[in-house]
Image 1: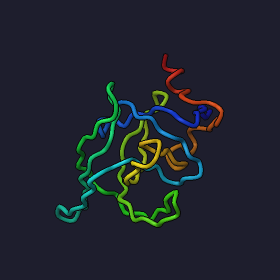
Image 2: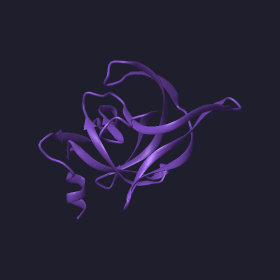
Image 3: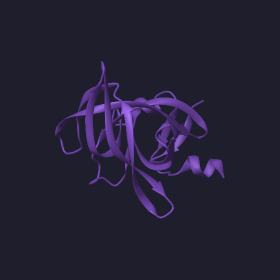
Image 4: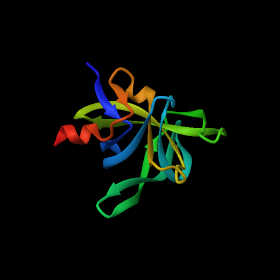
Length: 143
């Protein structure tokens, strides 16, 4: 049975060292996206990697941390302002409601957005349904 999530939740991305990050669920977005700054793509042998700073929440606010991660592929994504953007895609582990699975995330600058991460329908497919009148259902369940 699919679990119900709200329009905003907290998610863990343990492979990236993120214990809890506020996300906005968006069934209109195919792919999830994570705020990243100073994105630098480079090659190591035949593989492509990305170095960047990602944001994570700590007790006294938001902090940037550096990551160095293999790039799965690049995707053209239409942003909320209608612009097409070529973004690096990484694969990482997500944890919500104590359930752990692999998701794909595009990296982009979301500094003008209210949420550091957008949780798209590919990441939640087959696992969750959204109740847009609720928020932080996973946090309430874990207490």
